[in-house]
Amino acid sequence: MANPVKETKAQKSERLKRAMNPWDGLAEIRRFARDGFDSIPPEWIGTYFRWWGVYTQGDGAGVVAGRDGQGRALPFFMLRIRIPNGLLRSDQLRTIASLTSRYARGIADLTVRQNIQLHWISIEALPEVLDELWRVGLNTTGSCGDVTRNITGCPVAGVDADEICDASPLALETDRMLAGNADFYNLPRKFKTSITGCRVWCPYPEINDIGLTAIERAVQGKREIGFSLRVGGGLSTDPYLGARLNAFVRWNQVLPVIKGVAELFRDSDSLREHRERARLKFLFLRHGWTPHDFQKELERRIGFQLDPAVAEQPPDDVYRDHIGIHPQKQPGLCYVGATVLRGRISPEQMHTAADLADRFANGELRTTNMQNLLIVNVPRLQADDLAKELGAIGLPVTGSPFWRGAVACSGTEFCKLAITETKTFSRWLVEELEERLPGFEQHLKLHVTGCPNSCGQHWIADIGIEGKKLKVNGQMEDAYYFCLGGALGLNQAIARPVGFRCLAIEVPEAIERLLRRYLADGRPDENLRRFFARHSDAELRNFLAGEFVESVPRDLPEGRVPSAVEG
Image (cartoon, rainbow, N blue to C red):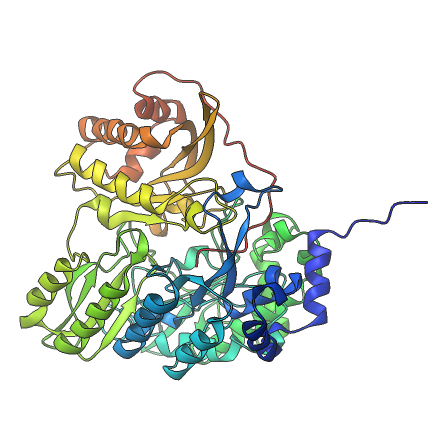
């Protein structure tokens, strides 16, 4: 008797999605809460919960304690709260803080998509957590799963003194159009959208499936604001920077264009054949599409032609984090950006930040995609006092480039796909570098990701390190592989894997050697990106090691496709 053909991951996923729209299953979630964790069927644990922003969390050991590239799961959940454009009110932040204290063992993380993640949520508590979030206008719908993820935008939209326009209304309209919409519950995989009116492109449009950046043109002597359009951006194990289309998207065309791209993605059956290649970028990487092909199909779907693109000015190599005290376009007001090291924030910090936003401003806060927190509409004369109070609770407004530039994914602490622990490691790494290199002033993006899937976005960092394991005296120890020179904007580039890895405990010394070589040999006005660009992989590898070393491969695992634990 012939053996039955085994169902592939993609086939299983597609079958489950055809069988049910998970957003219709709220009554089932409430029943699971009454009956307990053991009552939850596998299709909910592995698939349907994600549409509600709910994801099983790991046991702290990641893939090394599991099999097939995935670690063991605990009977608790990660819960991701959707915060469109990073816009947050003080009462909402207090609610999140309270939920974190009561149900999440005090652990919350700001993500690289302006969300806030809670951990250790039990099934019994899940309905109450959802209900409390809904009562303050927050939700978790579509924060995970094969859907449109949180719509990101400039966190200082509407207050930035140098912005081209306030695009946050478009981000909110897009969120209302897509989140929870049954027409878009069954996409091939996740779908990320960024809309910004700022000049520094702070929500990273280059790495989104749709990236819209404000641009100006003159029509019959009149100024008109529209948007450049990029499509297909994404990182993971196959990084691809979005392709710019030959299009000027008018303000009133933004929603139809986004809807059209989402429909094009939804209807691309070729992207449903392999979970590992189910992102929009693979139309370009695997299926032979060109930007021209894409635009032609998009215009066919939306029923109108887009005007030709106009020249744009991508931002130079700058931070896009909005940290510090900055004047707003509103006279006498400023915004204050605080650094949240590796994104980890406590209930006490959230409560106090909410109180400070009420005391010093009008209760408006913003989350950023560099895992930081801002308070806006602060009277200029009170900004320094606010900064001091934020610093007193461990959210400094100023800090070293290491503190300011550090980004970290969830790591093995909670992610079943991770290889290394990242959050505690990142804090230790920053403290070590501050001690080793006092006074270092160069802007530095230092991204730590616990596996090759790049939830920590190491591909766009100056120094991006990717989690590995090395055997030492018969024991598997955390290690990191180095990728250097990533950048977005004017000199965009994917970070180069330079063939060097070392144990986690050796990472600070390796980075110190690299940065001391930059300080000694860097040319006048040469930033890190240019320094890395003019050196070969072998030279950079030797700078890191302090001696000649042979190149080592990245050793990519053939594991499960990530379900975006981060952001």
